[in-house]
Image (cartoon, rainbow, N blue to C red; front, side, top):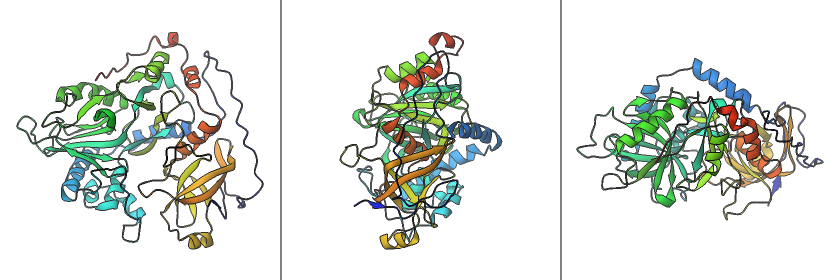
Length: 453
């Protein structure tokens, strides 16, 4: 049974409004004509472009010892897997994580761990949650970036399981987005198998950002984090894609499976996001099932967690699942969102900093047996979401129950908004094409980075 929230409020904080107050019908903003002579502009519903600019500035100011971080990450993933194999290796999607808990370390404590060697000592759910934060997670595109045709790449995203693949000490391990182990196997990656030809020092390790495509049992590599001990964390996407294209094929990892190479690896075609590149990624033939488009800012470093410098976009033509489905594979009548309950009753997204969507009163929390850190599922009611000057002002949300225990994080703000837009006023491929102009405007662009399998 769906229960209404007892109290909801949103920034800027005003007098709390009861969820059962009079609802205002949602009126989608008018859609401007698609004029290819000028960039496409929508009414502001987010500060995504501002955050893109700030992220680019921050990565220039806050460089870290990426080489040390990459080496420790590889070592920790391998050692933790050898010491305590996950029980979900056989079917990582169906497994449910342990209850969140009195026995687990406080969530704030996990967030404060920055040394990967210390993280390597984490066990069970704690370890999975920490390693889950090491993947780059793209935001959902809720507005068109400035200079899309000049500063961005585009590629068709393979459908499958997003994961890290680490080769080190003669073995290879893949970890899913929720931190659990997907596969433990030999590979032709640097130091990825115990063979005479593929041996190497402990410094010869590799970290790849991949999507495992079940249909052809192939790891499609969408980013390179470290290669033969050389960290690419603080390298631009432009350089990372160049190295990925040149180095992966040299390793033999793109060859068919064999005794010491259980799974095939493959690269994904990457295009400059001009009109021709966008159309190629959107409608071009690929050997895998598509699940939307990925957009990479050419100047962006590899940043763990949600980042506005990498974006995902979907429509019905390039993805089977544009709108989230329920456990039966059906699209629910009302949009569902997953939020995290904080100690003060606030309901927040997984962003940094988190975005509050509402608040539960203490009596309701106690009555329902809820605890801080629980992931909770809500339905968006008829009142919808209200934006003022690009900021979320109000949301009509109703408590529906706890989230699936296999879920590691709350939804990001951009995902909630993208899903909401997909139901009411979607960002369409014509909007993206209008923003990049005509093909004649792109004659001076550098050539695409072609990654052929």
